[in-house]
Length: 200
Image 1 (cartoon, one colour):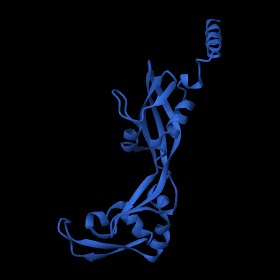
Image 2 (image 1 turned 45 degrees about the vertical axis):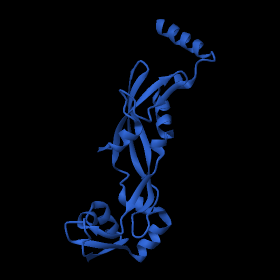
Image 3 (image 1 turned 135 degrees about the horizontal axis):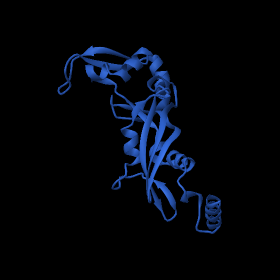
Image 4 (image 1 turned 90 degrees about the horizontal axis):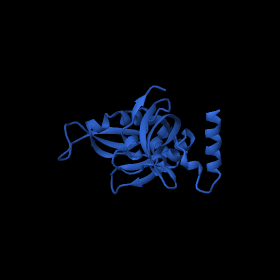
């Protein structure tokens, strides 16, 4: 009976103009705010290095994926000053790579510099939990990379899930996700950059 009265009182109070859906940090609101934030919506940009690169760059996992798909090739080359250890590689797009990658280029450096392309976006899978203390809260959530194109599908496995925790704060107009560093809260940008893969 006491619980019913409390719920009824809360409902009556919320009929006033001062109450809004953002006043209560629910899982749905947390998911909506995280998904709508600039940090979460920012696409993943992959930078492809062409021209002469170190053996470390040419044998990196991402480079090996591009080689396996036949999008890049490399021939041995003399290492320029400051690039070591040998051997170095002169990396070029194959004809298939030109057809696949050229339409995706969003940013290119002059000469043979890195080529930037948007390859994936974050997809929120679920809110795992909310821990509230007064006007601050920590929200744990799970997300994954969703490919935007063929290159993204090759580089990012959608079956790999990431777990992150982000801070929320309650303001006079409702709860907001912490987008920039403030004391005692981890920003969304920081938590996304440091996220570790987890089991689905």
